[in-house]
Image 1 (cartoon, rainbow, N blue to C red):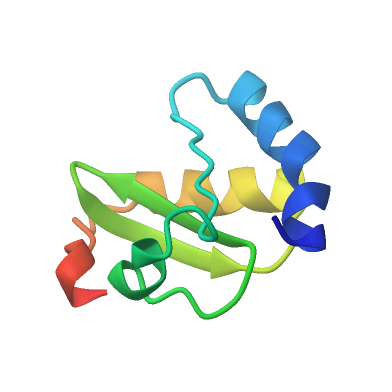
Image 2 (image 1 turned 90 degrees about the vertical axis):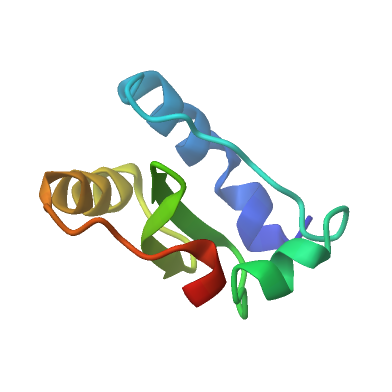
Length: 88
């Protein structure tokens, strides 16, 4: 995995511990290259928040725990149903 992705490992572990209501899943695009096209990934690391199979949020680049939880809280509070992965 890329250096910024490796640097995010602890933040993602902290996010999983802090937010048991959110499933934190890591996917290595080197091992799953079809994810690049499927989700329009153009930079790493990429964070995608799903609800009910729809994409609520996408963000790229390193982020702090506070930044990630703030974005997650904002999007989960929204009534916006998001978009399907096919439209992303």
